[in-house]
Length: 143
Image 1 (cartoon, rainbow, N blue to C red):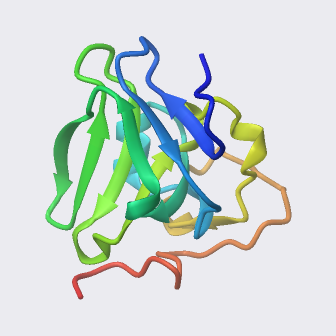
Image 2 (image 1 turned 135 degrees about the vertical axis):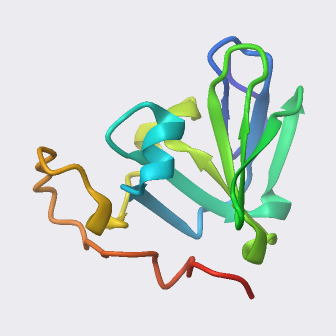
């Protein structure tokens, strides 16, 4: 299922939650932190960060889980699909998981974050910049 209006559309596995992200993302990243690994069930989580005002839920609403003292994750309460991530100190932005997009190939990641936490057996030689911690576009901590 795709939504008719332009932008990047996506949703959860069961279709109970759908969203549209207008415009282009601020950043598209692979995150290797332990929390993203646990939330996604994979060796890293890829996400695109948009202005919060550009993301609209077109069907349903994600359930929210405070995964740390500085961030909240959104997921489908029915199928458990990971949908969003939002830092408290960057409330004007919200990230959507690339795996939840209808066309994830449209937003290729441009960097790796938190590579100091990367799983040792994971060998990605994609030529993208690698940052041992957060991006300068999404610094850790509180504003």
